[in-house]
Amino acid sequence: MKATVMYGAGDVRVENVPDAQIKESTDALVVVTRAAICGSDLWPFKGMKPSDVGNRMGHEFIGIVEAVGKDVRKIKVGDLVAAPFAWSDGTCEFCQEGLHTSCLHGGFWGGTKLDGGQGEAVRVPQADGTLYPLSVGRDDSLMPSLLTLTDVMATGHHAAISAKVGPGKIAAVVGGGAVGLCGVIAAKRLGAEQIIFLDRHADRIALAKEFGATDIVSERGDAAIERVLALTNGLGAHSVLECVGYEESTRTAMSIARAGGAVGRVGVPQDERMPVAMPTFFRNVTIAGGPAPARAYIEELLPDVLEGRIEPGRVFDWAGGLDQVPDGYRAMDDRKAIKAIIEF
Ligand SMILES: [Zn+2]
Image 1 (tube, protein in one colour):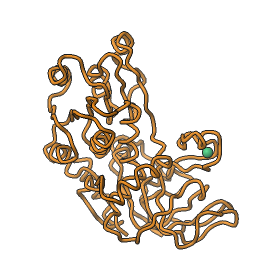
Image 2 (cartoon, rainbow, N blue to C red):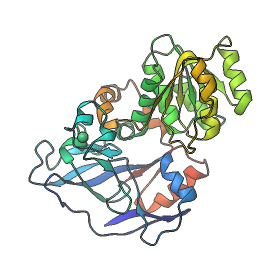
Image 3 (tube, rainbow, N blue to C red):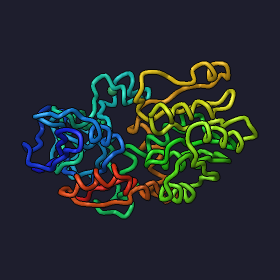
Image 4 (cartoon, helix red, strand yellow):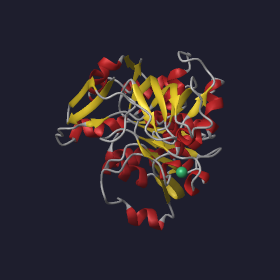
């Protein structure tokens, strides 16, 4: 079968790999029908040290179950299923608490040991706990939005939940990639009255406004902080969604949270240190967030997608087949595309 393998910075290839196959009795074999390229796939694309074996790529996918191991009970051959960006057993202490990303028997796709979603098929461990069956056809028009539930929409929602967005509150979204845009959708969905979107790219700003952003801040650094304060009577936002992970964006997010407010961090931190520690301490700012338990959120978000109340699939502005995956990486890295969908 063919799959995407990253060998180093800027060196991503689609090549022949061993066929995915069931190894454990709790596995399923899924033939991929849609996959996505994630903003976090760009981290190794920018900076991975050269590797001879390479890393299999992709952690957002939907597909059809082709086979199941003998201990798989809930998932059936022929099911169309969504696979969250982490796999999990669905039964351990953390899964029962809804924190599937900390599953005691779970893990993440790709790398050197597991298949990735940007390939023709995937061996799915812990199939019953991991996969979420969808009740639509494989080429349903809602497929792009359904695909976002495997990561970006769940992650934007997690940022909003962690930042305690609620009715009447002021939310600020730092970073306008696909996750930040989904953060705008999530903030609106949870009732935020004012949604301040911090980004400078015209295509993202246009989409953010359609998703519900009420104010745009295109400045950066101290100027951005001043603008947000000016938009909030000098007090800052109740709920800040940090959707980037860089030092500067984290500094901005921490600095615009009002006293008693909360920052929901979903951008993977690129720095060991936490900026603005002292002021956020004295303002009693809650700092929360982490990898979204997408498996737990699918259930909550799915009805809104199926009934058309939210359209997170609009973040996809680039589409291609498996052979075009390297072009998709370049388009996203060059900021010519917000997010790429791969159609099989
Ligand atoms: Zn678990």
